[in-house]
Length: 303
Image (cartoon, rainbow, N blue to C red; front, top):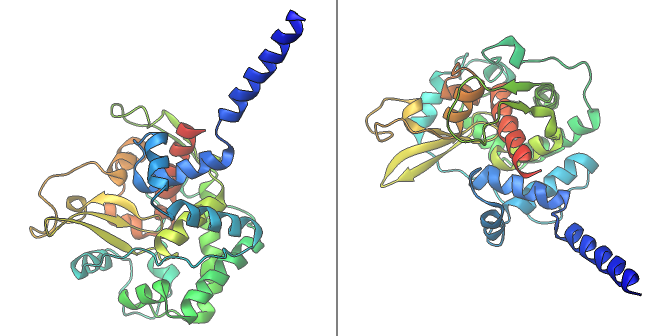
């Protein structure tokens, strides 16, 4: 009888341990929250943040959409925009084409990464995924939404018929980045930046969900972080990677004159030999690369 009671007790305790382990969905939610609110926050802090935001719900809803084609049933929020014309002028100056030329969005934002090894090729991509991306772009275009307005700000002469090709290019770039394993090239800082990070850990559908909610798929989108009336940091690109304003420009009315280490500066130092300039984040492949690298690091931490 005593033996039976011991066995029952052990089974009960082991089942409690299993129940207390976070599910894969909960892990993904924590990753998404850490992407927006800070990789150095604890799970408990991130879950408290979740109680006051719909950001994680929106990302996960679009993640499901890109996997299944089922559109979210709730009303989506508009991609954040805290706009400053000076920042736009600086970013436009770094484009490889004149914004008034008759060129497509791909021509404007298709500069490859600094090393060819960071620009792998793929033979075939999921055309269902391309169609889901295209459907969102088309809807935004027809209602003259966020993506449409950014095309106007950059003087990109887009046409509705160009959106299909852009969707193909975007999915290709997102899928290609999954082929990469990055190795750390510098020492120091947090143990969060591991010696090796495998970008295939991140589902392409999650990368697309982040990029859609953050920038509505416009690679040159940005939002400013303002303190005491001064632009101190800027979120740039498809994944809205955070940079120090002083990394972008030396204009005295932008930044505080001190180079701080935000997400861009840290990833650039640790995994990309410092070869990228902050304005490179407007380039589609680079924006995807930084977005996926941070997500992979987060998935390593919270798996």
